[in-house]
Image (tube, rainbow, N blue to C red; front, side, top):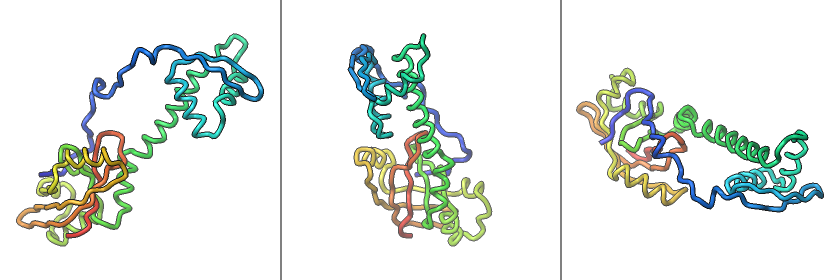
Length: 217
């Protein structure tokens, strides 16, 4: 049974759950010879920074050697090229992270929701409705015209799907790009409503959530 979540706070994942493990071999600097603009340089960097530079290269279409050359031209006489490359790699990664988090923010997710002409909800892993769009509210008002506001809806709405939310998240996480169709049921006061809902992983970075498009009711 799903419930409408009252408020905007999200469950916070503890730092211990989200921090990655560091392998011993990741700490050992790796030597590579790179050539950019005709200049050959030998660089020693930890693997994660090489990974960052390679991603930067793939994204920008600029060779790793040219990135190193460009970075070297910004270095002062007393500067350290490997330190500068570490900063560059991490700074680029943070910029990408900021852009992706903005794209997958709750604010942008709500915009995607409201743009849908179909009744649509965001369902959390603990079976609560996090967000819903105007089409969803219109659908409910056809059954109960006296619904006046979201607070009233939060108190009275009972929402469930035929498949466990945890199972849906697991299946879709293992099959990226896929959707899952299942039945749903809504209880609102003395009224009930059932139908079919198409579920997909919501494009959100805070916590795992589902976006559900009601296809039939």
